Image 1 (cartoon, rainbow, N blue to C red):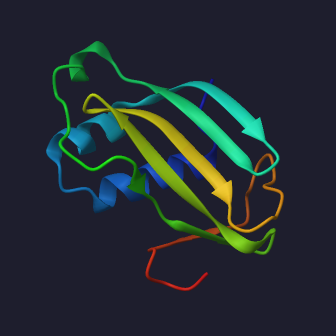
Image 2: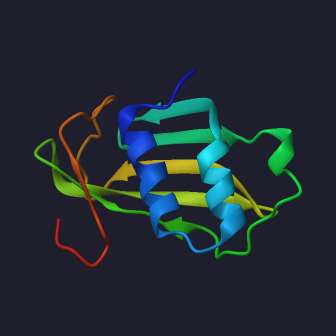
Image 3: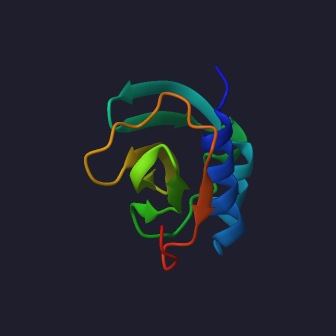
Length: 117
């Protein structure tokens, strides 16, 4: 199993914005374990290599991600990164509002939360 391009781009966005060195290391080495897709988004369970297990991050949980702007999402989309015991565990991507989230979104732009979608 591999990350979708959207998942890859969102994880890179988190790594680019992160200040916690252990979080950055986790984001740069994480792999997808399992993906659950619903009508409004997806949950991706994450797995880390054994080398990162002792390098826990000290960040709030969950971490807000970028806003997703796309002509396929009327009200845009969002993401959350969940942390469990200092280790990243789940990436959630979802549509804002009541729009259905496409199974594979290819036409999008990631925006900082303060920017308008």
